[in-house]
Image (cartoon, rainbow, N blue to C red):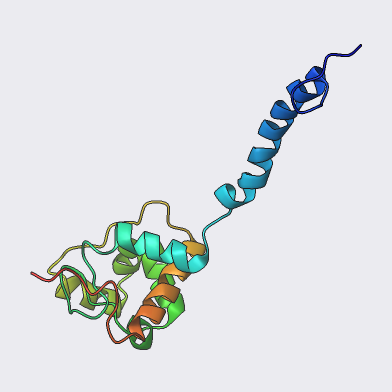
Length: 143
């Protein structure tokens, strides 16, 4: 006669259920854990990590200019190119880039680590969305 477990299943069957369960957990969780961040989240994270040290959205100029409504001051193509390589835009003699450099008292915006065209667009999307708010979450610290 076959040995039975307390739950009525053969001992061997019970033994194999746990490994199968353990194998299915990663497959269920993988899409959530490995899913790419939404563009809005990507822009928010990037702005928080790379931009808030020098820029606000709605508080005024700091080291760099206040970015509230920046897409109304300059077109997105120009802004995207500037975000991708600020020094190249300044070195090209672009008048607006030269003006920004003068207003920043010679401080050149550093290249953003890991920046890509898609990430620059996500940043601009975030800045546009935050500019429409009465008070941006990136208004800066009150001192």
